[in-house]
Image (cartoon, rainbow, N blue to C red; front, side, top):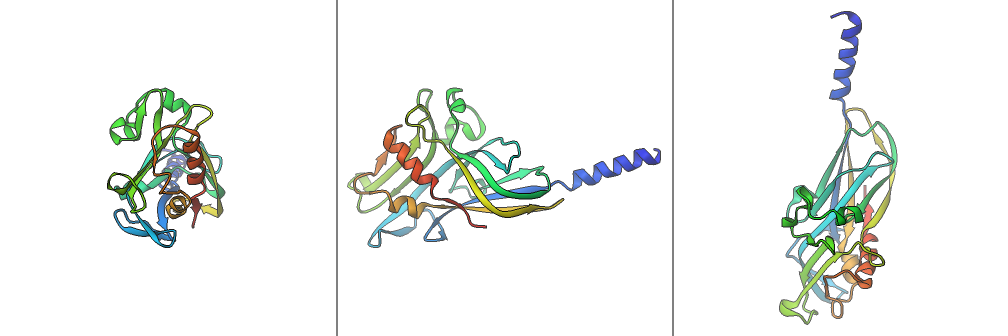
Length: 227
């Protein structure tokens, strides 16, 4: 091996061993504290609620203007699913993170898929209604339903009731350094979502509708980068 070939091989080896990555952790919170499933929380200062299920699709996750890709299913029952790792991120300073809450229309008209999009995950309705973008289930004494349950399965991809939401969250000049892993924490304030939803009157939503689209808007406002 001549010196030129050796230098190229060495530089390539260093480059491959110094790949940059970013870990994005989504943390559902209540009153600023990580939410715990099956634990009782106060509702509107006097009533209470308990969450049993939280699942949400995140797709097209990208840092800055990098090429997006992938579908991820957040499931609070599976703590590992709440962190998404992005590899091969170019070094530099980044000012925002992009993603979709849910799945886009093309994915929905493509029929049931595998992996995170596998129907066995319980997040797929049918070919004509598509995927459930997020699912929140729990109980509250104020719900006049069987077992005091509330159920929100929010989906729908056809106009005018689309529920997929594009998110652009600002970062505080996140610096990606060679060979390092940066960490981003995105909080999802489910307390805000539930406290702005009248559990007495609106405790069941399981079809695409104007009201489902309004709930998707409210849910999107609950996302914020905390660090």
